[in-house]
Every structure is written in C-alpha cells, then in structure tokens.
Image (tube, rainbow, N blue to C red; front, side, top):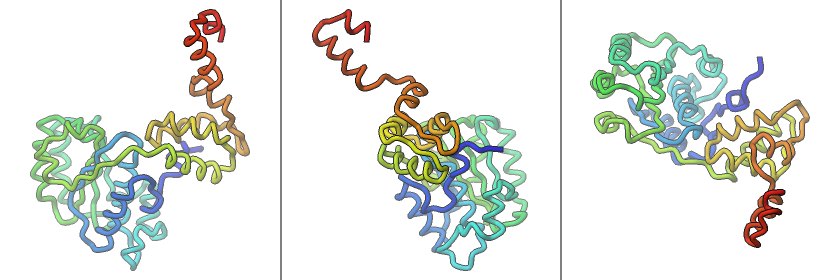
Length: 267
C-alpha cells in the first residue's frame, strides 16, 4: 500500500531533520553524553518536526549501537522496530482523544512496568495542551519523579495552554517555521528520490503555500504527483492550489490603477 510522501520520507536520523538544528544538536549531544532528560516539551507550529524528533529521541535512547555518537543507527533490531512501528516501548498518546483524568491515572498505573524490549519506555503525548486541568494534575507527580526507565516527550502547538507547573518539570524546545528555501531544498530532494520533476516556479509556489510547515508542503506535493516520471508544471500547481497566475494579477492591478473596470472584470 502506498504511503503519503511525508510519512514515507520521514527523517530517520537527527541529521536528516531540516530547519531545527538548534534542537537536533542539543539532543544528539545529550544522547552522546548519556545525559538525556526525563521529560521534554516540544512547542511549535504544526508540520515542523515535533513528533518526528520525539520518535528519533526514543529510537536513539534505545539504540544498541556500540558508539553512542552514532545512535540511532537504523540497523539494530530496536531501530528497525521503531521504524516499522512495532516497538512496544514507544507509547504514543493523542491527548485530544485522551483528555480525561482517568486516562492519565491509567498511564500512571502502568508506568512502573519494566520495558519490554529496550532500555527505556518513551511516552510521546501529542497535543498535550488538550488535557483537562484534572488530567494535568494527575500527570504532575509522575512527570516530576518518573521511574528511571521512563522518558516523556510532550508536544504542543499551543504552548500558552500548557500549565506552568508542567513546563517547569520539562526541558522546553521551541520549533520554528521553516524558510521557503529550506522547504524547496527538501522538495527537490524528495522529487529526486521519487523520480519526478518539479518546475522551479511550481516548487516555489508549493513551498510558499506550505507557510513554513514542511508537512503541509509535502502533502501539497503529494496531491500534485500523478505518476512516476511526472513533470509538475506551474499550470497544474495553480489549478490545484487555486491561485492566479502572475500575469493575471498584474493585469488586474494595472486595470485597478487605471480605473478600467471592464478590463479588470474580463481578466
């Protein structure tokens, strides 16, 4: 079964993550020094790599490679299990669907069990700002003093909704929006891997439409690809995105400046 491009080419190593070097370098150094914190809070806009880096961190702390600087190696059985989505000690929780205090109490009751396969159990709680006040309170003590075999990564797009008591117990990293140039580089790399061609102007349009979110830009690219060896043109991109051509915009602007309503309406 075919996968969406953003899932198929999800970064498998820290070096593959673009635009968040200030975070990837810090996490790599923490893994290499065996000084990974017990709880992290990843904040930032959607599609900037929060969940991806959370999974990479989970993979790195459990990787079996002898050289800690090379973790994750993507070759050992742990890394392969994470890549395949079958690593039992990586638990992902969608806070939007598990907002209640009972969900956090259930997590608290199960957290003391030892890991099944790896060194650590890693809990990724996505959209953590969706938890209720009671759920946050139930999580507090566990987050402050988790068992030594547990790591937490909380991710949110709305940092201001996360209580200060939660923030103070986590190492916080702020993800930034990607630049158009960074997104274009990634799209060009992806097109090369997939074997299709993107006209430069079309690539610029897709990157701008992503508005700093790499995942959004990759999803737009997915909509435009029709077949292997395809050529993505400006015309097709404009049609899918529902944008006007530069020529049409210039003509309408000129008509407006010259008070020529008839020409403007006919453009």
